[in-house]
Image 1 (cartoon, helix red, strand yellow):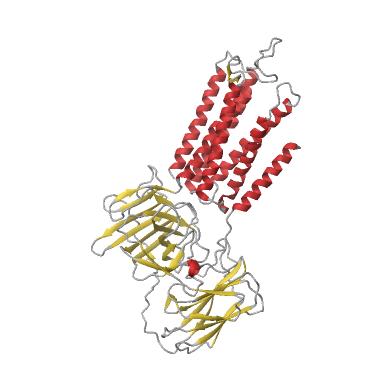
Image 2 (tube, one colour):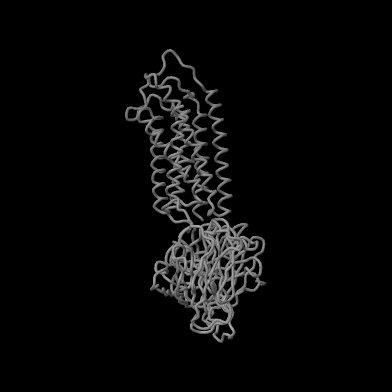
Length: 614
């Protein structure tokens, strides 16, 4: 009963810690600035409803607007049903990436807020809270020049998981627009000629991932190449990703470091013909902001074949992106940020791939950890570059945990269970050799585990939702391990009547921790952003480890039975009572222990070496 109570409390504590430190996404205070050109809510990748929307946008007046006209814009439901969220902007019909006009007044100021997207002032409205409403109304002022027909596009959320996009209304104009569209949307052609990585290092700069001997040219999980064309002063870019099923995009980013944030991005999406796209963007932080562009791309081609996305396009050597500082987007004086990502300079290259929201080309969080070059790359200079998806601290975290729980903990347990007769007459610091080995290994396991936990929190900060099951089990292991250490420090003397209870509690708790540690390692490879190849191989190696543990557990128990030595009336005073004793003169237990250690060592090395390649 005591054991159940302790475990129950530990599990509750671990769960509470995880719930406290997990970062949660959701925007009850309105759509984020990064959705200016997508109008898609970031709600756990939930797709938009495809049936007819119960909500409508109405304009008054709706025809023959003139420069500076004030138009009343209203979002309401056809049947009186309420909604909690919305986002709306006016787009030039002949240039869909151009947001026009200005929202000058809200008739429901307690429910809405206005912010600025690139290319105007106060040109987007969203909800400011999660309160329910049946309608909402604004005043919008037309631009000072005729731009032809204008389409008001809105996304309306009934609740967190139910929303409709493309809720539209058209403001027609009697005059034709003569202004050129400076922000075209590129529609890629279907790629007919496969991407070619044969000349990597000769005429192209190539980033190949992962860092394994099997990753060459077209046989990698993902790759990108850059070929500089001096005559046109641009780069021909080719990239592909083949990590497994369920990916809709592949993208490359130029960054000053190996972290997401302050990066220029180029993303190819696939799907039906209308969903194929070549997207230009910027990562201000941990999200991607789709940007409009002018004269940046040419010759865009995309295709998806058998789980592999391939993309080719021409990219200008030098281009300055413009965006709004998100922290000033809702102010009366938004700040425009201009950033130059000159490709003649050295950049850390990042590769990412993942799914899009179903039925759209709106990209979501990358499926696996993005791969990043190990150092800055001059893409004008031919070369082959390698990199990794995991920071050094993550690799050290994994390596230390593998050493602690695959190699050391198994030996520690076997010594305590079956090797108490090892050098029985020799004492080390007043205690038997087996006990000092057991205690020393336990100290190493606890130390490596503690350091690993500190490293992963230092590197990742808050627990990510995708890693929550792994983190919860890991924290349970840490809590039980701390309890085990506390119990061991209060170990009763050999003659104490509580000694037998202590031995069973100590053994059961130790076995339980070992099992939970194994579950935690399996859950580590189940994290969403672990690549499919790494996941499959990790499962195989851990499966072999479990098989080895079970096989040797049986082998040691059988050996203990056959080599059990009966207790004599002149029992060795250095041997504790009620222990299983393996015959000291036999060489078989020593050979068994040696082979067991070799098996664990090989599995440990293989798993660490394989992991660090990614």
